[in-house]
Length: 279
Ligand code: AMP
Image (cartoon, rainbow, N blue to C red; front, side, top):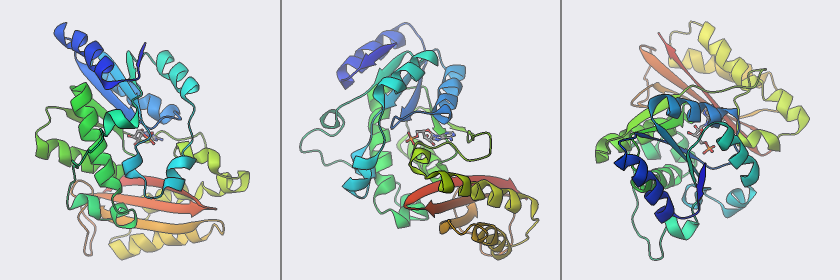
């Protein structure tokens, strides 16, 4: 496994693969890896001859620098995991390599970036698309894998890829969970033992939604909010029920593929979970 600390080095290595007609799969991450990231690597390997993973804690997608500073890091462990998973190249770029001095170019999906989670975190998805577009240009992959856990992010990236005409297939990978149902996340380590236990309410609420047969948005919202309210440590921060691909709001009756996007806070740690149900 080759570890590149500069974009130039990474381009050079990937160029060799491309000249040998090998296809390339990209797995972008912010590090502090877990089995969820490894599922992306596995999927990328299934679709391509070579896999490049990136580790970059992207400053432009964080609202507050405190949040950015608190982001957990463990590069040594990440590299062991990526090597074991059979990754060919890891790019760990410096901020100045990704955002050169005097940088003034942004990429934004103007509608999708500013709805739902994007409303609560202004500029977040603009930061995501800006960095992902750059990573696409640095690595020029044939496929790129993203988790369904960050559901809006996945849809935003699909839209950007289509709109800008990147010749890249975007693959969504199902959420990997702990044995008890909690969606794996780099943030889970910040939960107290009590909150870790309480956090099971997210998947429980989504299970309740799935079996509820609620016919309307309001009825489904009630089912989920009620399930969350059974856990006193949980504060419901976001509950969006939208059409799965467009993220459009649903007025009343549920039909087709519906995405439920849930965010719940436990003692300052915001956890996300989502489920797509088809009616
Ligand atoms: P992050 O390092 O948190 O930016 O995540 C990098 C990628 O891994 C994103 O595409 C995430 O959606 C994906 N990911 C994170 N957690 C999981 C999970 N539990 N299951 C599947 N994919 C995940």
